[in-house]
Amino acid sequence: MKHTLSVIVEDESGVLSRISGLFARRGFNIDSLAVGPAEKQGISRVTMIVRGDNRTIEQLIKQLNKLINIIEVKNITNLPCVERELVLFKVFASNKSRSYLLEIAKVFRAKVVDVSFESLTLEVTGDPGKIFAIQQLLSQYKILQIARTGKIALIRESNVNTEFLKRTLSYPHIS
Image (tube, helix red, strand yellow):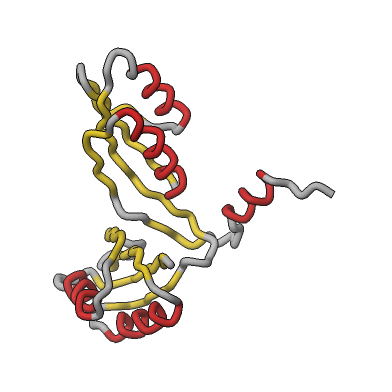
């Protein structure tokens, strides 16, 4: 199972190296990694996606908490969160396919950030489901290049689980 970990660290050189070293020593692969400044100066937020069962992830969190410069580690996998990712897709665009690609971009609220005679580059921001869906559609048109950020996530203070709401509202129970 994939787990989303949110790690608050002191913004010091070598912190990311120690985190990745811990993962490497334990034989873990990091599927996604995003790092950036957090709400306070001198503090960074690391969001990472790792695979493992619950017990293994708990052990990994304990090991992370022992590292120098780690302030807080949370497994936010099952918490209501706002999740986003950014992807750039460069897609082959013939005269015939260009209008279809522009329609796909419109439906997914993607931005066209570059155009040439043979390609379109689209910027897509959204939750992982949206990214997966547009990639499936674009793959029919020959994706030339992909550049993808890691997933970032923040816990929803409202505690509203939008995934639950999507399932409930999309498929109302018939009585």
